[in-house]
Image (cartoon, rainbow, N blue to C red):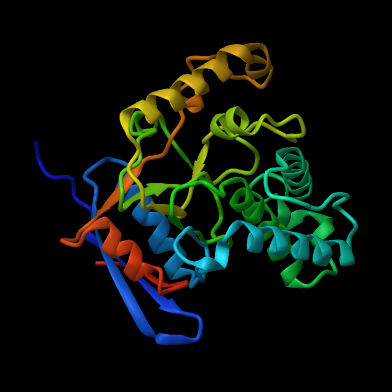
Length: 299
């Protein structure tokens, strides 16, 4: 089999730094996967760079330092709700304790309702006559909801470009590349739609969700996972997702999806794997000294 051309790129360099010292850097290098989706994803990364879009939340390093521990995430979520409500009283509830999934679901439903699908916010009158930060606060509320939900989730780094238009959709071949497996030091595609997909609904027991939206669109957004799942955990998760689909067949049909629709595929597409001779524990220890993603470079 001939080697897939990768836009002349072979690797990715992710550069981390410190809030109080941008000159103190730590680099991780990743080998791009040889699959048919990677060139399309690279196009989106390059598009973000041509537009000079900044990485939207360079601090989004979960479980790797103390900045995003559960209690700090809860406090930050409530602060963001107060900021949004000071301009528009959208939220009626705040999070009193980690583990209150019903409140997290309700807050997320408010975000879905008012942000709208993908780039709908650009024409939403809600954002008129408001500071630019208003939309950023609303988007960050969504992210901190998920951070509060994932207090026991794997250490990971989320890299997103919120300003990049979400115009590209997965095709049938792309869905075949999705996997529920997670391997330490692997970069995966990231859910780019607004709503909740099968995984979120199955895990969150959500009676408040505004809309079900499966994995339809992709962007440059991605996540680096620092954990390997054993096969029993993967099998259990896949079983729970299938149970959810079977138990909610009528609801999914009402949304226009049959159970064999490839758009109901769960998981993410692997994009690149870490190149290192260091142990996992050494990488986690070294990375814990840093709290920002400074740059994301295709090489």
